[in-house]
Length: 237
Image (tube, rainbow, N blue to C red; front, side, top):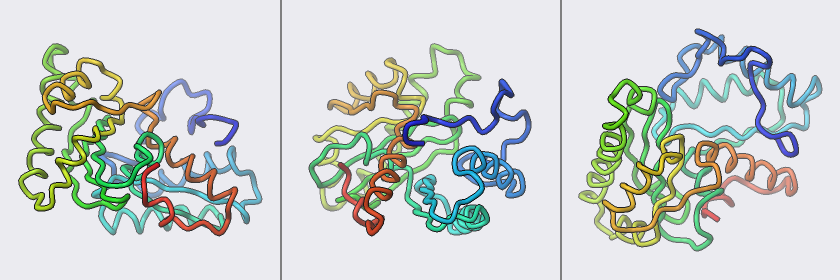
């Protein structure tokens, strides 16, 4: 929220809601609980009158149509006037990406998902997803975590490279990939990715909140300019 920072959906609980985890592996698995969660956030952030409110929803790049439809229905139930939907990679690029156009690689290493996305002029050209993340890797020997996470990322980039007929991956690597998510907080991970790819990497001030801050940046622009469409955020800035 502009001027208010990140809101805790479970104020005063000291945890993240116990077993109420309506989103797992980037998908809504319990719509009823998710609706209650969103309702609590909306009560705090928007108040009772939401007729002029705008919500930006970011989702995993490879979220299917069923997930997006469910998310839109839940948000519609909040009574806001407008909902903008974009992928997490586009949100990350809006916040941490370079200003110039062209190909950009976004690597999001989260708690339950690891994603690599190739954006070309802001549009998703290719993407890979591994249904594993830091929560899974925490069960490993801590000394092995960096190697396993980096190998997952490199395997996805290699797969995209093999299917890239126009040199976009090569151009994105020259520019330097954007690293987001909790995994990007670990220097032993980011340094190894940079070394293995032979390129610099781009990090936001707080990589774990890159996506939500990018979505917030887009939200702020929409609130300042109500006629702005989401497509105007297609090019990472």
